[in-house]
Image (cartoon, rainbow over all chains, first blue to last red):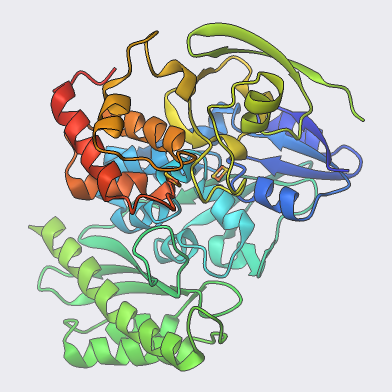
Length: 290
Length: 161
Ligand code: FES
Ligand code: FES
């Protein structure tokens, strides 16, 4: 029997208290993964803690100290937030790629991270901008980088009584921009064959002074590719540097064969997307410097 | 069986209350408890959009919303689209363009299209197709639906209610 107990607390503390109850307790935000799971494998008894009535968890705060993105803010809110698109276009692009308008209105970036699909679009985009997860639990709060938060397909660092409260991103440095590109057979309503998130910083003469490259859907979790970033730093992002970064991504990719693509295909696409995402991020960074 | 919960909400402008189990979806309660069967269910996994309703003005899949979440919200369903005998311009244009065959997807498309025109009263064909990508139709091939929505947008001239 799919018996569910439901609670809708209005503060993080109350949510933590609700999650501390006996049995399986699950935070519930947009429900676009949880409800589908419930129907395919009806749980025995579970308590669902709806976190959408907690103001701290649905807010999006963007200011000089960076971004604090509430874990229960919907992808639609993320895509409609004007300042956010200007500041982190890659992150917004990733959030916008998730599902239909109906899904966008419910699904959350926090949920995308917690669902921990290897192909989650927002995870590489978050790694590229250096995002951290703020986790609340009975003993207070702790912060872990997004890349460490996701530990495997469908698994995260979250303990039973813990809650992902928000994602925090440091402020964007000067002449810095991000980009996220995904390859999938359909442009919309599809799952990544490969995803690539990139952030680059350019000096005033166009030299790349810092970079981050992250890949999704080519391993059990999304991951950063430091070798690709190293290939870019100190260069003018010329053809040689782009090819070296692409090669580093192909080497780092560790995909599976499945109906969406073979290992060889996914490796190749990882290189192509890395190159294109670097070029897109660089053109944005250049616009920002003018 | 766990106890049912009492939910108070507004559906198509009318105060409504119902009892539901916490696991029940909004589309299930609309159809089976409130007998508002205009909202359809196809997949119950968020893929087909047949269950589309507006929740506080936002387009959502009724199958992926818990009925219990409806407390203190405003819901719009297909039953609230026409005013009495007078069809909404989108409904009228769907008829004129023969934008339905079996009709099971139609309430979902109409609600989704209504949400689109409220958000963007003058969409391009591309914008219509993008917005409606969460609604599946196995009969019409979509072209007539898209034409009907574009025609309705034109005839409404920005008056999107
Ligand atoms: S029944 Fe809800 S999307 Fe198909
Ligand atoms: S008219 Fe039959 S599914 Fe659309």
